[in-house]
Length: 264
Image (cartoon, rainbow, N blue to C red; front, top):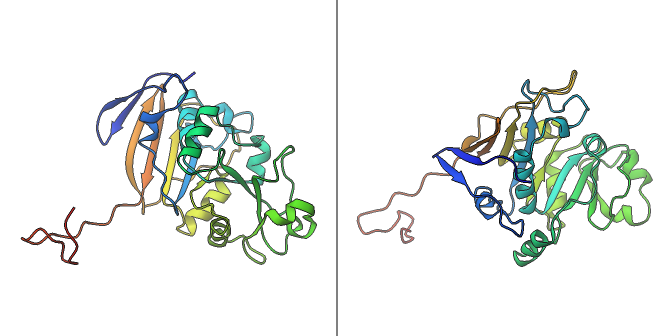
């Protein structure tokens, strides 16, 4: 089920074609390229800005439109980074991926499914995780690091001595070839990445559904990012915020840039 028709409303007006019969969503995926070495944050906010609905998870503020975007941004990443509390509340496991999507990822030079990286101090992880595609991002002095055993010792990414450092976390993932990072929260992990100026893109869904009492707030996009596009469907608004592109080098009268390279 793909939900109601999706319409691009910024920077231009256009209808977005539905997924094909094989489930691949090329028209939507074209709006969400994920370059190597970039960090994308993806969150959903309830109508009041809450990060969760009445059930304590984001599932009760999601809709098919938001899930469709989530599938696309997951398809393009190397690894999904998430906090342990969010992973437990949302019951994270292997990142779901249809067979056609897995084949398309392999053809694009990616692993069949994205890896999963969980930020935790305690080491309390959801059950049923595949240790071959899951990473534990923690600090050197944490219970998670001290008690890791067996295959999990090989899956540790140390992100600081005592305090979780997002820059070290990203560098540790990159050392394992995981450079297209999709962070799915929660709000605390998101704020740490934003405070470190480590977010290159922010995909924010504004849901029309009510949030849960006492749920943490979803951070707004920082001033360093600009709105690249907006999609609307069924009362949901899906925004993609990105870093501004650097201005192009001015060309001279001979058609060459001032740095000597041919103008494109």
